[in-house]
Image (spheres, rainbow, N blue to C red):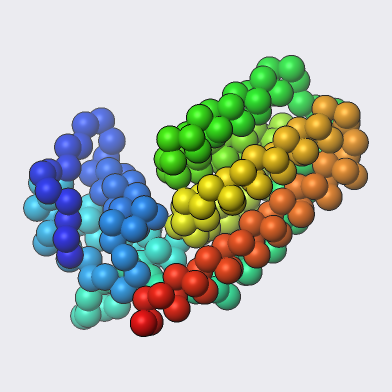
Length: 229
């Protein structure tokens, strides 16, 4: 496993959380590629921790389908699966659509300010071609709407599904055309929310996620074909 040079510095976070967040980031950004082996010993040495927090972190990554942990065998980065994209995106589209509908009439001026800040920051990140920063802004945007909806179950399930699609989204946001399309759709969603048009906000949000799903499917298929050659 080609662990990045240097060492991982753990400050206030627990050892397990620090290992989890770093390895998760490596998987999402492609530092660790699908099918690549992950060695407990290398991670332990990199972070200067025992194998216990490393194994706990890998178990958490396994629960999010980012790694495959096989008893008595190597732990590997999970392969990209087009079926998983549909399994995650379709229910997420419905949950986020419901959140947009529920948020209508509840969003404050501060909420709209935060939404507009997320869009502005995403545009700046896109100009820098910083896919990770664009994705972070995208998550801020959607989290603000889900939070305003006021339904903790919608929020919890939405967050869970978001975790499962982060690796796919990262590749999606590497494409300038996809970033531009997403930004335009976000503005349309904000317009509907400002107008307190719940049906329109719901429909635009659902279509936004379904378009993203189609884009991610196309990109994932292209990626898999390229790696088969």
